[in-house]
Length: 138
Image 1 (cartoon, helix red, strand yellow):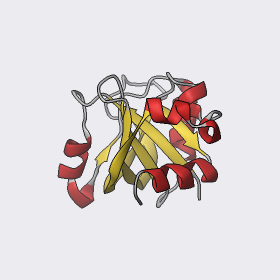
Image 2 (spheres, one colour; image 1 turned 120 degrees about the vertical axis):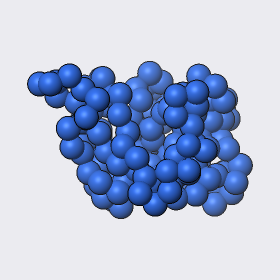
Image 3 (cartoon, helix red, strand yellow; image 1 turned 30 degrees about the vertical axis):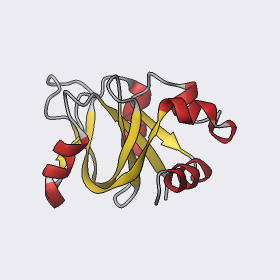
C-alpha cells in the first residue's frame, strides 16, 4: 500500500471539519493540477494519507483513509478531467509535525513536501511515513 499527503487551507477545510464528517467522510475536491490529479487517481481504497494544514499552521495534523477511489469531480465544469477521492478521518497526530521540523530533518530532505511544496496531493515514502508517525507520537 502507498502513503500520501494532502494539503488543505484550514479556513477552507480543516482537520476538525474532516473529523466532523465522520465515517461517511467527504470528497476531496478542487484539485486543478495534473500531477496532483494523477496522484489522486493512483490512490487505492484503504490507503492512509497525511492531512496537512497549508498556509495557516503549516503542519501535518492527522491521518485520513481513502474510502472511495477516484471518480469525476462534481465541482468541475462539464468535460473537465478532474477527479475526487473520498476520505474519512482516522486519527489526529498527538503532536502535529511542522513544515519547519520536516525541513530541519535530514532524513526528510527528499520528501515531496520539501521538494514540491506547491503540489497539493503528494506521495509519501514508507520511510517518511514511519518517521513522521513516530515523531508525531503514533
